[in-house]
Length: 497
Image 1: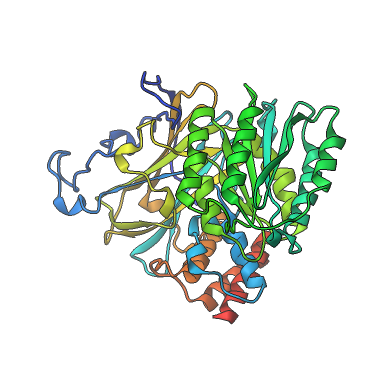
Image 2: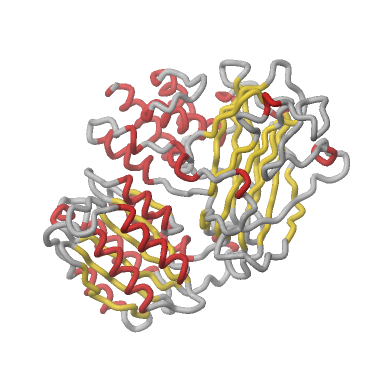
């Protein structure tokens, strides 16, 4: 399939004197002979002219809605895993817990990787069954973990829910098993602290170096036991206080919250708890990694906590998933390759009639704030891919440039901004989503599945039984276990519906 033209020249921009602890950027060039090289730059809030007009002779029809889409990057996956848990229990997930971008980002993609920190940009797409509609995929990737080199040491404060509800199998026992495995995987120069909470919160282990103290940490983990109610607010507050007390300069300081997030005692107001997280993030740069457990799970609160804490959330329901999170994902997230990353997609008004970003409802950013480095973005580590999917209705007979995607981020050490961009032309759209590349078909399947569960009205979405057939074909052709699990979840949802 013909791919978009990637702008590979990465520009390091000088940080303005007013730069705060936020986003990043850099720019690119398409090279000689590129159609994009002769185009007006319509990014970052500049209005686009209609075809045949000068930039200052705007077609009012194109200004509302505008041609820009801007969002903070998100690598959460909890929504998809929690939906699979609900379906396995024989029930449909609550539509309010279905976030399509988390379904889409639950699957690894084979995007090209950059050599250093920052991102590569891949843009592709394909036609749906309605020839006027297409799915356009924007794929961003960081360098692989193999190219990470020496990461900074980690200072991890584990905040563990030991309330009565955590006694259910697959909650506290799963957390203990996972922490034990991860303790063996961390380096000698890493540090760990343990905070527990039920009615009240308690620091059971202050920040402790792994070197020479692994047995002490393992004993503290094995001694955890369930108690009474869930004072989540106290747990978060004590967790961040403990993290600040054990703050290590030059290290990655992170709070890891393990809970079913069912707050029922003390401060249960989400905004109040979130404000505490936000204050510590701004002052000390401490980020949050949320791990959800349990069949009954406070998904919305955990997701909001992670967003406010410049982190992300996962959900685990069995030992295999837990080992993957604590042995692979969490160590990978100890390092950062990009801070406050945002993406902006500029659709060409000469070829695009309308477009819809699938998901990212809680991550939208005002178009004019794309290059405002005081506005929060997302924190992304090595080995990550981030995917955004758009439903795009093209003008009849449209030819030429379709969209330009730009990602902007801050260098994790210098906080200098950088950007990278990629373009897509109409003739690069595959004839059909269902005959496109494996990655695009997987993205489309996951997005359509989320649309069916959450009733998001994605244009030209197939019926669930048709989607189940497409998923089965994809699983057969790829022989992928993760896609087979997706196909089984779709089939289960089809039966329940």
